Amino acid sequence: MASLLMWSTGLLALIAAGVRYHRATHRTPGVIHLSGAIASVGLSALLSSPHTLMLTAPVEPFPNATRLLANAFGMVGAWCVYGLLVHLVTDPPRAQTAVRRQAAVLGLSLVVMSLLLIRAPIPFDPDFVARFADEPTVLGYILIFCGYVAWILLAFVRLVHRYIRLSDRPWLRRGLRITQLGAVFGLAWAAGKTTVATAVFFRAGRTLGFESTVSTVTAAPCAALVAIGATMPSWGPALTASVRRVRHYHAYRVLTPMWETLSPVLAGHTHLPSAASQRPHPLDWRLTRRIVDLHDALLLLAPYRPSTPRSRESIPPATRRADPEAAHEAAAILEAVRAWHSGASPRTNVPDPPNTHPDDLAWLTRVSRALRHASPLAGDQNHERL
Image 1 (cartoon, one colour):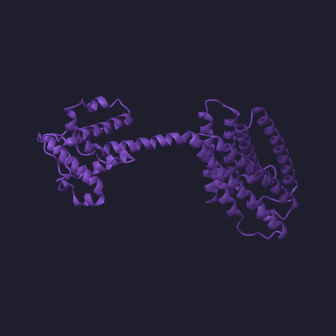
Image 2 (cartoon, one colour):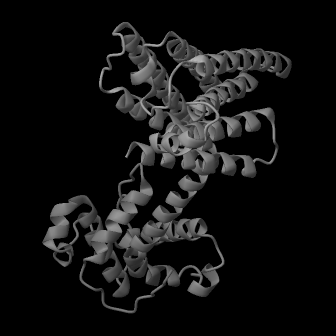
Image 3 (cartoon, one colour):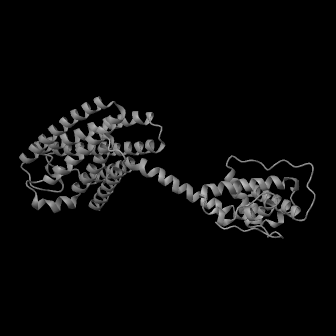
């Protein structure tokens, strides 16, 4: 289960990195660091899964070499994340200096870690920390690794907090907050790893029994949240547009009963485009046109509206109980349309228009639902299909 989770997270991160790099119109340092960070985190998750470590153990040049490579990718990912934020919040010369300084620290840390691991008198074991943290070289390896990652993640959290206040892009701000949450999971992972290793060292090799669970529960969310948050500015607006289109399509269909009830009134006063002529227009345009036409029809029917509708019996009792306000408005519309159909004279003392609502579309859909359950009107009806 742990390996499956780590593999899924790693593949998600690699795909996200490829998509982000491919969709970038300009390969700026920020884009390169972002793509490198996501890919490095994904590779680290893939290589550090228990099954990957067991599969590569027979061909390793020295024991635990795959683990060293996975940890190296994790550190490179942390360095890339730091480089991304530095380029966003500081001017290019200072950013390049800071990135080079961190690259030197990263290189030195990897060299020391490699020497410690090569000199450690230990065989391969998937439960690395629990089995070997009582060795001074292994403890030093773990402390350097976790210390570097925690240091970078702390700087990242601080820089992200600063950049969120400067950004005016909503999806970028959301993505940065999710990435920041991923960094918090990374800090929890580093703190848990350090605590477990130190406890094993001072307990002379006696394990705590939950080392692997803590590592998986904190590392997998870190990689997943970083991948999701980093790519959110790319797919977030598209997702919003798709959701908005679905909502508009649903609203357009729900308004059909009200449209069919009021379209005869409009037909005598304005030109209603046919279904064929509306098809080339975007859905947003058609929905707006339908709302405008409905309001025009309600204004034309205002002189025919009764002060007290007598058509409430045409609205089913269940609908009246569920939404009495919309049912009352639907009954008034039915009474006005019947008066208009019968050729009654319009009233000179036009009643006040219907109450307006903050969400006009929501109000119209409520009335349309009430009209959908009403008894049919006499007379011709115009029908339009989407």
